[in-house]
Image (cartoon, rainbow over all chains, first blue to last red; front, side, top):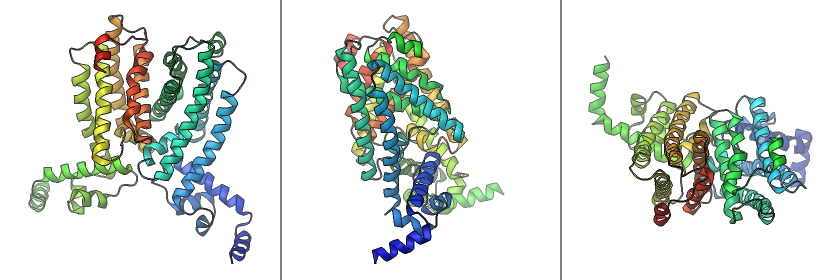
Length: 218
Length: 218
């Protein structure tokens, strides 16, 4: 029976993977634009250009769609963070690159849709974390991973005596908190210049001096 | 004509000021619980225990209600911030008190409703600032005011040579960003302990040493 449904569905939709991608991409844009609560399945399907009936073929619920959007966004962001934070450059320079890339990404978002849309995970944390435990847990895992990645770089810098902050976990939490806070203000003022502060705030939070090269690159 | 409406309405509602207060209070709780988008006028009125028809007597729209909720919340918070930041204590100790009070307020919220609800202004910034310009403008004014209040204290500390950060505006922006970021994480992890970090992060961001008294009070 399932096979029959699958076949007829595939005929109906063309390549089903396309339809799933279209739904995910439409949902992500709409969530960035207006948040999760304001979103309806009908609108997502209309934006995606797929029949409304197809939604529940791919996603059990709006929540499971949100989780898929989060996972997909994190998969991409994790690749970027890994490339930057695991590179061969000096540890502090890697953190500098992370902030540089964050600002570039927010600027690109602003250019494409007119407003700074902020951090998808931060947006959903403040909108959704008290409403669905599944989303809260997923967002916790992502921020835990971000803090761990940043902490590893701070530990390297500490070993090289380039920072004075000795509690590397707390320092990493402070950096990620500062990042989320400044991205919030970039969104509020629709202005990415505030993100320039991330680097100087990072140095202060770590008790570090700017490495010569990173400053030259700034 | 307006007078007739007013009279009949007053007869209908009892004391109208009560009904307005009830709507505001219900809206604030519901916004803290589930955000603005998920909110309907019917639900607000049901929670407030006032007839649905009464809503538009007091508020032009859901947006004007949101602005009233924001204004009321800021009026209260501004009183608290003014009391703390304009007190006779040493400047750094006043900042310490601000973080202490922030943590206490979030803990009280958690105890009363089971979860850390975060900062109403931060929540609405990430949910709403890209959707309504009126709300964006109001939230900008509030965060501008917060940064100014914090900046004045940093300027005093700088004059007393208790901090090394010379750009007091940027330092104040960093402190408020750190506050919003750590409150975001307190909400995500439903745990106010993270807010302990605000003080040590504040000292790092300002290039300050903890004043003896403030540490003793920690």
